[in-house]
Image (cartoon, rainbow, N blue to C red; front, side, top):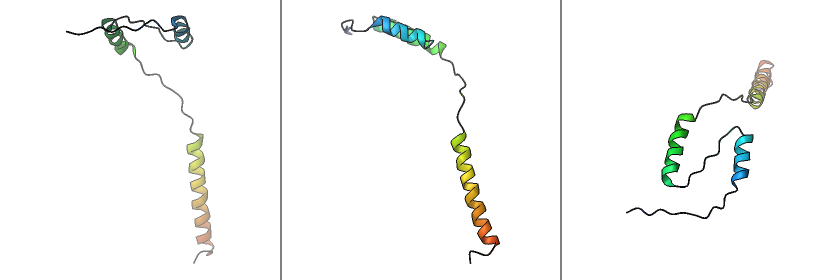
Length: 83
């Protein structure tokens, strides 16, 4: 026999709905484990991947630093500054 537990309604649903609206999301309310399972089933079919742009400046800066170090070492070798 499975026991059902409930908690007092302490959620600020209006705020949660506003957050969902402002972030292009949806607000779901589940009052039972059955309803929660239905929501999870629905979410599984709604999740999508969105492409995002990634900042590459730090990678290019790191590559430039490595190239400058290599150029410095090659310059020292070329002019016989390193024995």
